[in-house]
Length: 516
Image 1 (tube, rainbow, N blue to C red):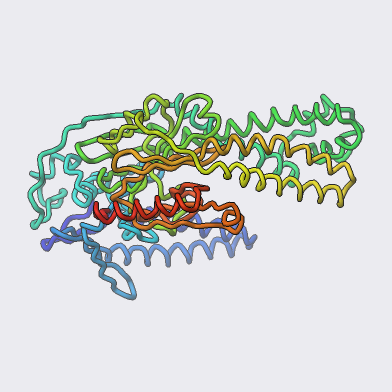
Image 2 (image 1 turned 45 degrees about the vertical axis):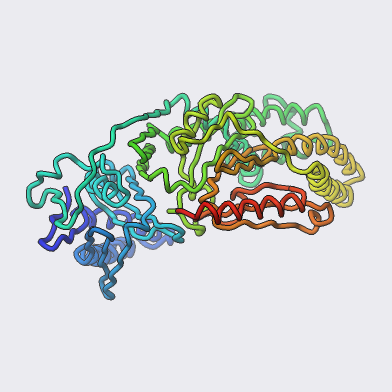
């Protein structure tokens, strides 16, 4: 169901829009009033007044919001006090993202977000439309003609009619590839992500500060009562380290198991809920992904608009020959977080499936033929000195603030040396036809595959210490991907080689021509 179309092609949002938006705002009002601890009578009055005002405002806003699709643009008019008219050229639209929360899924409606190249946020948001209307919008604006509902060609008035000036559609493309990720695979994805380790550390710190877990009662079964006088498990464990090292190690082992199980459990549940029923479909030159339990997300984009591909391999996944695959289009601007600018193509895949998955995005790219070149050997020295500096500062601080035993922390310089060498092995770059590849990361290795035709800018940057060692980092900038820690870059190249590589790539970009 959707609002009927006017004779001039203008359409309104779904009739349930005022109700759904009012409910969302009402939750916020109730939460704010309850948090303010206002009296019962005043609370009822405030909620009633805000409900009436919000409902009236949202209803008027709904009636004033209209949109229309023409041959070359999406036109939106909206505004209660101030009328606005927005025109979004169809040639600039990169993605149409459909998202439906749990409440929206019950009513079979969705929110359509229109993304353009390099925008700081969504260029336009249609909140809410029926799911069929969302699919129709995506089909017309992004070109996924196969998704258009079959009944639309013969629809009766008021039942999704086509706009009069709509151009003829191409024949539907056949579905040529389907990849589905099972719940077991999603559980493995959650268990092997670095999020699990982060949650373990968060639980340790949270329990130390807020004592929100019954860990003190569990430790009482393993440690003498005199070590638990503070009543707080982590704090007691820290004090135990100064009196009985064996008891400290026992308690640390027990807490590690408790927080480890909890952290990994939360990570697994988060992965299953976020990527539930993950499905990747390919229709000719278009790709579509859909996933999510409480928030269902559907997105379609053309392969030609993919700016780069990212292969993510946390350390546990590397040991198990697993990885995840993400793509970036120009539809998500630099104002978003790094992870939000990437779209997951598969949350978990086997290493031997990478070539097949990459062919869905870059048919001419051969992953198995890639030959990696390492960074400059002096990179190992820089990686070690960075770690050695942190260890030395921490050791001196402990020795000054606590006791001379803090200098024992300097023994961590030995594993720091081995970690620096291990990190160096995961730095590298490569060329494969019309693609440039870079990789970095020890705990979470990221490999980027960037088509040369998508490169917008190249930057060779040097820190003071890199200049001293004759090293530099080559940053590769594509549309919607600014220079940050998660952008494609080749770390610690020799300065001369880095300049030569940058100039060579710049020449190829000029000869190839930049495309979005």
